[in-house]
Image (cartoon, rainbow, N blue to C red; front, side, top):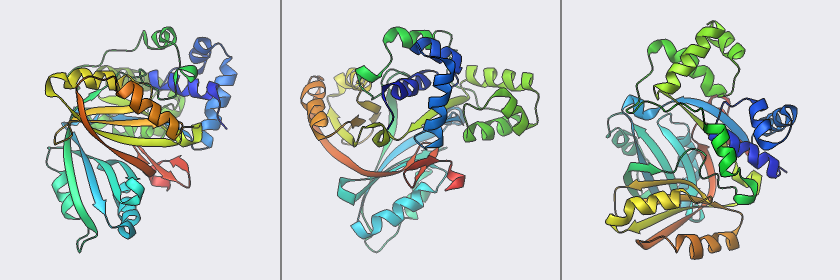
Length: 329
């Protein structure tokens, strides 16, 4: 079972996905060999994947949150089918197995229509609700959802992120010549320059130059996919919040900074703020609702979708309880 050091290593990688094991070990106060060994075990066991991705916004893509209420017997086949689609970035089954929550990436803001038209008819899908992701909240590494005792201190986060480049805004799309590098990073976002040179056929200096240029241009982003339940955090819920509009931004920033919150975004629709919350168990979740969430001004209504199981997380499929590359499942 992963321990607090494993969780701190994961938090460090969330802050700086390609940080060297030596630097991370110095910040954590352990040896480079210990960090490398722990990381290898987490990756081998399918608990953790670091992947590099082309930034969707650099291609003009937007994201939609879809909630599909289905007949229970139709949920699993439909969820598995959605998880296989490249434009679907996240798939989870919630609400006792009667609801699918997914994230759809669309290049022009309307591409989700074609996907939704292909959904099964004859009553398998009882209701569909689709909302646009208007803005996400929270800074990289600021909300590790692992709790304060298993997280890095603000000073440790600062040490890891001090030399992180500020990406261009708006981000610039990568060139076609960068596709081999992006494909290699989608397999392993922490692949060494030597390994990336082997996979792309480039020289190591060229790999280093293009990595630096893509990160500075905002063309390349990293995701640190994890399985929270394998780390001792077994309750995952999506909160659909109604927030007074003048207080929406402040509420989003505050909730996005909660260590229990893995994702927070302003969305269109009746519920204008959603948050994915990860807790150890039901009492921990109740404590979060009645203390930290209850203290956020402007929240006047909410719904809760408790996740039953997850099929896709960003760039990884969940296959037999392990995170795997989509091409390997």
